Length: 188
Image 1 (cartoon, rainbow, N blue to C red):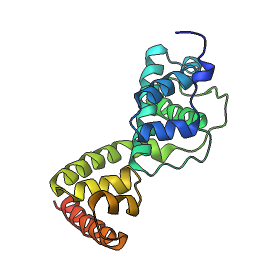
Image 2 (cartoon, helix red, strand yellow):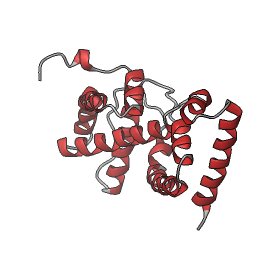
Image 3 (tube, helix red, strand yellow):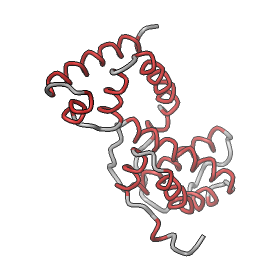
Image 4 (cartoon, one colour):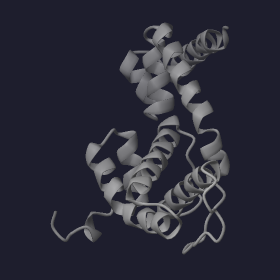
């Protein structure tokens, strides 16, 4: 690679939009942008390069899933968020491996992101269940729900895409679809 790494660091907004739009280029830039920071932290705290790669990968997956789920609110810089998530994952791994977890060397302010990490597995299971429920929902409901909640289309856009006479009709259809989705999702 050439030396233009600095210029290839995407802005926080580019990352979020890139993930929402399934941009492979954005993901590649994101992987390169903050890895050195996480690697440094892991090396300073009883880890090696393989540990850093694993932790970073896990951190990026958590970020990716949160953004895709549509409930991601950036309350700090993305760099700080990724650092905090990766730090939390590493501390958890250290305590599980009962390595010496004392005297953790920090070099940046850390925000509390524990619940993100701890509920990660539960959320993954819920995403799988939701995807299955969406698949059972059928059309046009599946597309309406995905367009509104995942692709952030407006009711006006959905109205035009599906040929509804007005947005009220589209909203009514979306409501009916949601009710059906809930019924499928919550059935045992």
